[in-house]
Length: 388
Image (cartoon, rainbow, N blue to C red):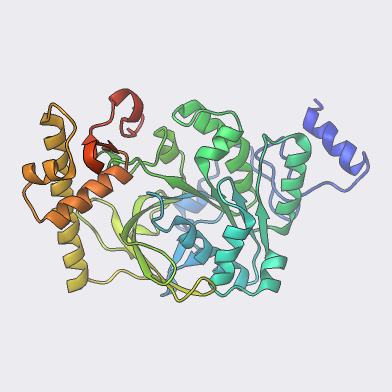
């Protein structure tokens, strides 16, 4: 049966033209220089498992500073965090390692632009000539047509070892799909992520977590299928020091899921249930230069213990602020909050600022240049919840 896609391919290459490396109309197709996809509905040959010759997939794409790998090739991987916790820095560190090793990288970007992404890559020390040759940046702005898919298939002819998909929420919207619908999430995987994965690349989606840390668990925003559908590794980034120009930012990288089971064993256990796998540290010297590291986990030093204690104290103050606003009949000024919440005034103000930034409380102008604080209407700004 001839599909519309097949007709588009004939129109582009000619009926006798050379077959492209990936037939996007068949998500199980593979490049010509790779083994064809197996027929998956028959009984599998289990001899390698039974005779002990089977070897589980290994994370060979990207690496920590100690050489231990980050992502599984030919599998779906993910990195999720709150905004400005370093997802893009993390992804670009792996991109730089791959292109410096002589491999090609695809960066499919639904959020930023070439200047922002490539600018950061150059900031990390990438050679412009290497970037031009091996870093393939794609910025979709419309739902893909047949010719768009041909263009993307031609990029895959370079056999990238790493395919970053930055902005799953925006990407699904571009495809006309609903973020919280598990069926649509599965459809997005079939339409875009699986063909990338079948090319042999380690596919890495960059995603956001829900705003409420108490309701977050191991989930990114959207349906549970986003976690269940992963067959590689999922990392959660926990920001410890803000990233920015002229400062040293730091995020802890934890393992939320490790389907093949070859990554978690190289981390340290944590009370959250998510193993501590690495620390992302980006030291920005200027807008043109930054030094990035993925340090292996070590036992907590005094500075880290103090950060943990400070975070816990601040979380406790946030809960008290929310309770005070919930009990108040009218919106409260900053002083009104401080009168009701015990703790240092500077900590209370910081907690209030964080709650405003995360959308958990609303701020509006009040009398005599004051600011009034209140809980948002549940109908307009309820915290994101993982889908049931």
